[in-house]
Image (tube, rainbow, N blue to C red):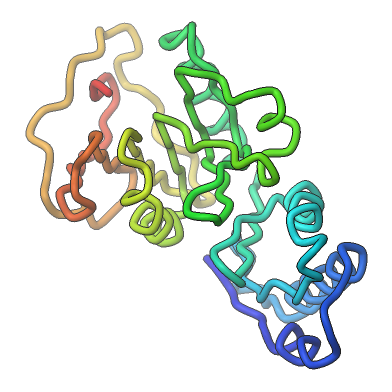
Length: 241
């Protein structure tokens, strides 16, 4: 679930551009207001959209580095998207990371790190690079335009992930995308009824998205956004990336 809060940022723009410390203070104030407005029905809040405060041009990239380091944010133009990952989501990300490291032993596989796409910054839930970004890109990814991964995985935030993939895909011609939607509720997830069975390749992908999780969307390299292949996730089945 996402929420939007932008009134304060719009008001501040008339008072001049801010340095990084002032911008960070303003973002913290807006997040505080979001938390105060969240009702009991919104406890599944996992992403907040706010306006990026106006930043002094000479310090913009350094300020963006600081904002991303503190708030784990993504940015499209003048909008910030700040994610709040719960323990269950982090567990899924770690499991995906561990699995990919075993299968792509020569690749760099990381969770939630900044990639620059079309002069904006994104944080794939899990990303895989066959060639490591340079040392400078790993230290200061925004200033040095760290490239997107060749394997980009998003988990759980279905609508936000779809919007993100739709935006970045035209600029990531060599990237394969995967979206994983898993139900998050109070009931435990159904355990594998046959844990000793061999995994087989999932067949018969769908052209329409399943109505209920768990399911997976797959965009091969060069595939149009609308040509996504959807799979209903089943135990002991896998797809080949």
